[in-house]
Every structure is written in C-alpha cells, then in structure tokens.
Amino acid sequence: ETGVTQTPRHLVMGMTNKKSLKCEQHLGHNAMYWYKQSAKKPLELMFVYSLEERVENNSVPSRFSPECPNSSHLFLHLHTLQPEDSALYLCASSERRGERVGETQYFGPGTRLLVL
Amino acid sequence: GQQLNQSPQSMFIQEGEDVSMNCTSSSIFNTWLWYKQDPGEGPVLLIALYKAGELTSNGRLTAQFGITRKDSFLNISASIPSDVGIYFCAGITGTASKLTFGTGTRLQVTL
Image (tube, rainbow over all chains, first blue to last red; front, side, top):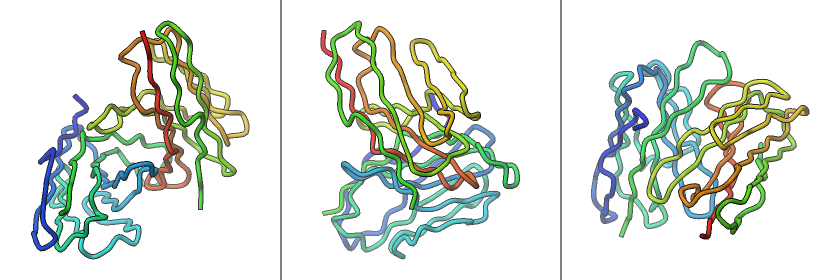
C-alpha cells in the first residue's frame, strides 16, 4: 500500500469520448504529479501541482486537462484523445517545502489507458 | 536536456546470484532515487540517496550516490524470484518537479 490510489485501473475509450482519471493521496503531501509511461520510453512528467496551484506543464496537448481541487485529489480530464495517447498514466505525490530539493515522490498504481 | 543512461537494459540471472546495475549522466544531481516497477503497477520507491558518496541499504538492496554526483549504483544480493521487474533510477536537481528517470533495467530471475 503506497498511500496513493488511482481510479480506474483500466480504461478503454474512443477518440470522441470524454473521461476523467482520478488520483487520491493519503500521505498528507502537498504536491501532486501526473506522468505518462509509454512502452520503451522513460517516464514523462506531464503536470505538477504544488499547494493546489499548477506550477509546471511540460507542453502537454490541450486534450489533457488537469484539475487539483485540494491537496489530496488530482484529476486528469481527457477529451478527443488519439491512439498514440494510449499509455500507463501515473499519479505521484510528495511533500514540498518551498524550493528545498530532494523531495521523494510516491507513485500510485496507474491507469492503463487504451484509445481506440 | 538531462538524460540518464541506465545499464544494462535487461538481465537474466539465476536465483541466488548478485545483481549490479548503474545509472550515469552528464549532469549533476542532488538526489538519486531507485524504484522498482512490477507489470501493470506504478513504481515503488526502494532507496533514496541525498549526499554524494552515500551508501544506503534496504534489506538485500544497496545503493550508492556517486562521488561525482553524476552516477548511482544499485546492487541486489542473493536474488529471489520476486526481484523480477523493472528497476528505474531517477535523479533530482533544482526543484522537485525536475525528476528525470532512466530508461530502466528489466530483471529476470530463473530458478
């Protein structure tokens, strides 16, 4: 049990669908992250929220829209995705204190997304 | 941009053998992390290293933060079947959002 949960664990959607991924952390952390993991590629950071404010967006297409209503919950809203968006989407959380380096990220189990 | 070169890409070993893998970069990192990922799951943190030269153990796992701050090593002693998985290194520099991952080492353990 890592303290970070994600739902759903698996999702199949068409290119015209709208769906949302949910992440919840039970670790009392104040920063949350979305990553994309594709086959044979390193983990790619998509979004970072710190203290509920988005602090980083790594040039992710607008068909991915994050939402962080509070420090424990993070959503990734999906619409008009492409087949190449099929991947494992991982959520992570950490404790950030200002600009102090070294915060360790704890990952959820991921959502396996297939876009048809 | 920063890149982490992880080697080997894959390993096939017999149960009971020791395993070594490493991660190198042309950039300096302030923190090194090692994760293990099982199929269909998210990465699980194994060891975190915060100081150059630091040597840290977690059961049969030992990791070291290289003196140059550009590399890190992970050793697994007396491997067992449940060690199977993909091992990732990750480095942090600057703010915590700058977590750079290696490409992973896939470990297979045969009986």
